[in-house]
Length: 218
Image (cartoon, rainbow, N blue to C red; front, side):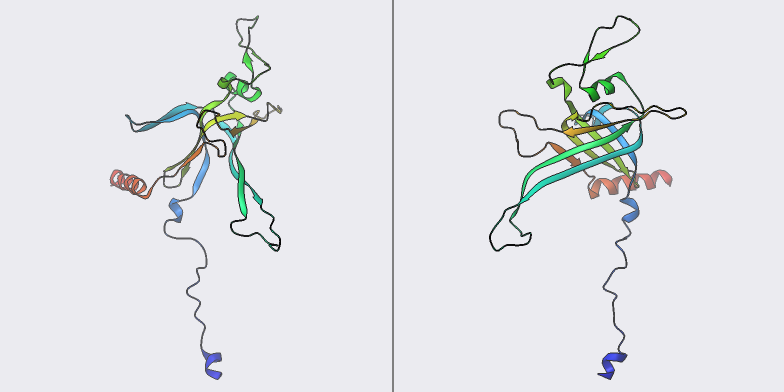
């Protein structure tokens, strides 16, 4: 008994934090950039798209599965196999400081009208949502501290919360907008999952980039 009391316990198998040597390279930094019509051009080995505009206050990505617990007599806790996915939502909330006609039109799901004054374009309401109102290949591109990008692409997105502008003296107006990912109802298409894609650089690409950066510094 005395030997047990005098023996120092060894707790070295427990890490004091989750930090590792790769942690500094795997931290997301910055607000990121939003694109539309963002696609990968295989011939050029490059991604191409149109930047939606400048933001102020960042961008927020939310991808959330919807689940249900199947009720079974005698099972009073969450149980593996009885938690079933019944849907999901995916959206990007942004705060746009660069205000363009295209952005405003997308927030109200409006249409181009005819202006009496030739100096202006005009946006008007419309009764129905058309295919052209859905933004194709809507994307968020953020960067890790090692310079590699994380890319999230919605095949189709639409703004769901309208237009709200709070204008004040000595402050830039920022318009919040939420773009939700939606499925495409086509023959043979999937209607039980959303068409979003998360691109994460693989280890070989990251190592190649870091090797190039070291060579440039040398």
